[in-house]
Image (cartoon, rainbow, N blue to C red):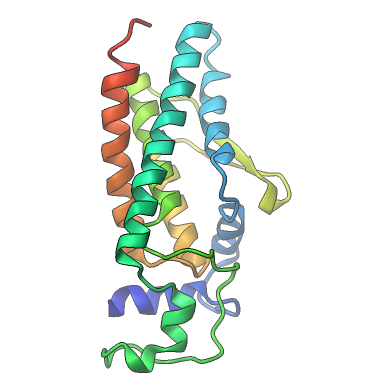
Length: 210
């Protein structure tokens, strides 16, 4: 808990001196919370592979969409089961968390506005993991093209990744650096999304003829 708390407090605060400019840019980029930003990643992959069939592409997008819906359902079931406090509440009330390794700051504020639902696990991390797992399965071990997507909360800026692992890691880091999640929530979200993505890939994507 102390690890999670202190990382979120140090890097996620609005006035943080430890968060770099690049980390701030990524946090604001991933402030956008709708699945469309993840469909952009999938679209960037298929648009660079012109020999794919329309059916193949349709099945991929359908698999990603259904898997993201399933991941979000599981994520929000967990959020309201655990009902864990966000960093803004925890930092301002650290004197009652029972841990001497955390320090209260009554004026602390996150970089971006805190969502109006419980913290654990991270929905963004679950969605990123779903996309990564399904894209990996769809390419059957072959090298992927450079992935990219844009974000309305970053004024339409484009971000790119050459590895799926880098994409998933960036999303997790961004949520911590935005001051709205703890590291453990991003790790749990990634694990959840990975499992959902594996199930979707096996049952919807790979089980049907391409």
